[in-house]
Image (cartoon, rainbow, N blue to C red; front, side):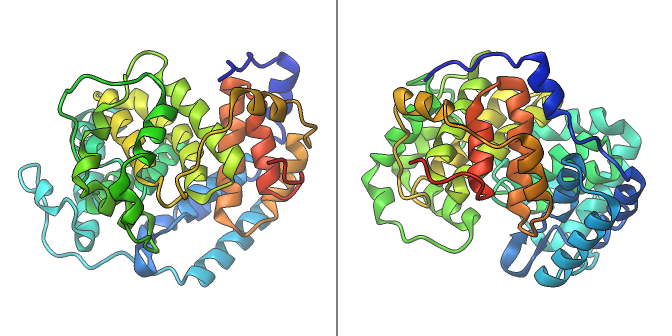
Length: 361
């Protein structure tokens, strides 16, 4: 897979537009977010606290942010967090892990902990325990944490820790076995060859599919297959954008956005290797949901990189008018990842998602 080239000054300047505006309007909306449950019907993830930030970052003004949230709140029928059951302490909080009905108790606990330890202290204390459960709510607890850190929002950090804990997803844990490859794409190929996974019925919710795959004995070693070194984040990001560019698949979209979230959260985690392994394990667990796709060749990817593509201003403008939370999420994440990696696939894939370029596959 070709190594993307560094961004030029001119491209970076273009990516910085449009300038953020109406920060006060975003702040007012964000102050309302703890009034809502982290999930809604059937345990779908509530994207509002994160997507409002993405909308703001790609140029949405106060009127548009308010309009978007009103639509999302009413369409998804958002409701409040669960009732309090019993206070939690440093000695008892782990009893609530994996219990969605304890989210409010967990919020109370983590609000106090973030206040006591600060953001960095709380993350250093609790992310090691939570890292293996990074698949919580199909990676959306990680998403909420990343957006909380973008704004350095202590309340949102606490809510994210509670969300992560309450929606904990149990998956096979790393054993320290020797890795088999440095290539994240090879992990996906090897998973696609596990015959038992092809016989699993697909369910409506991504985390249900992830959990079902995690219960297949042949899948247990996958978490240890990837070699974690200094370049692993870039390699995972490259495999993710190649997969999404080729498929436009909903799960592949979450691999791309998830790598953006990982980049934000990893510097705050004392066990980044554990989080990385379990993140890629989660992506691999969704191969069946994607139909076990193959990644395109390096030659195909290079040809796609040379295709004409709309400007980021045009892509942002289209995304900012969308009510689809995933349009906003992928546009912002692709733009941010392209700033770092310089890979034109990010711009092409975002434009394709927004219907601005024809199907190139």
